[in-house]
Length: 199
Image (cartoon, rainbow, N blue to C red; front, side, top):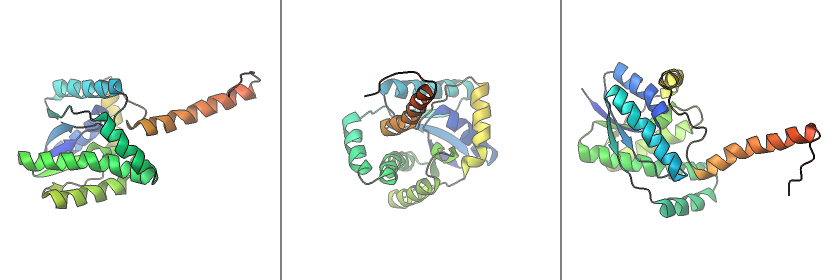
């Protein structure tokens, strides 16, 4: 059976990917490497959910618990000045590179990522980065359009009462996502005639 090292952004996304890989005859091993997730308490919470999933399913999980916050943020800010795609490319590329390095070092046939299950992630960018990094590192990137398994991941993770986060992990993404809700809330208050001063 061919072995796939799966970069895992979170346990809910892994559920659908794990299900699909088993269906297709692969042995999946999860790799946790996510210095992009902020704040640190969010990183801990997501890792905790992954370890809970391991306990329920027996999937092997490799944890790289490095958290180079300053280095990551410095690179993120520089990349973000070139736009959202450059920011995402930096963040995704860093994690895929580490996954490919570990896959090669540990003798895996392939590497892939749970990011491919999300309808909100830049799918083509992930695929292209994975292939390019795989060629450079000398290990094959397994591209599967896991978006077809997104509903499976929602169903499975809800049935297991998993924490399902509302943003990818990046602090800039978190601010963008929740800022929209804040602005909508302000508009709602104004419509209702609530007199609140927003500086």
